[in-house]
Image 1 (cartoon, rainbow, N blue to C red):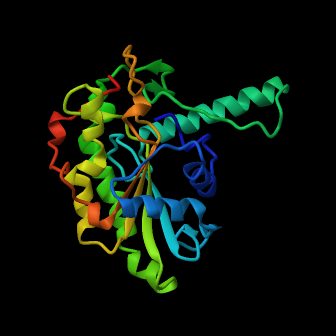
Image 2: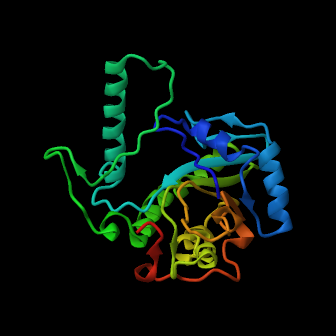
Image 3: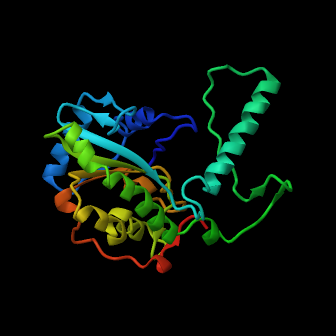
Length: 258
């Protein structure tokens, strides 16, 4: 895994989708059908439909995109502390650029904030990593966001009858495993966990594209992380459950970001 799909805080959904389709992306497929489907997705002539929904439309395919992370939040969506920190960081960067006056106006800004910083006091509050992000929050956030999109499937199909429909999940969660090893990290990717995949089993979704933006593993080993962790996994509906699928215990899942 080598890619991040959101190159900046202002990346549009269309920009992100184009990065998913770029040639340097490492895809993971399980079956011959999924390889054929990958080829169709990669070669299709796509149209930006984000003002209507679903987000991306081709002659034969539909894709609706949403983002998910593992950030602990007590409020739905708007209370996400990481996004609040990113917004603060971007404001600070823009202020610096304006005051310095020596940067190109069209320069792309990528700002990642530290949610431990408290702007009211100007101090950092060191916290337990698990209090900031954890696997249970990952599952909870996924259920909340994915369910909203599943509820719109009938509308998508009515607008575009006869087309295959898929979800593109932009996954900003950290890497999790039951033990801190490369192989276990792959086996513990969310498309192997019933906590996630059970939402699709009885749905009318034809396929899922799971794009990982934050699945990093740091190691002194000669084995590179991208040898085992794909950038994008394509899962067709006949593979929503497979031989690797099992129910993970969220309490036993460890983040590689410690």
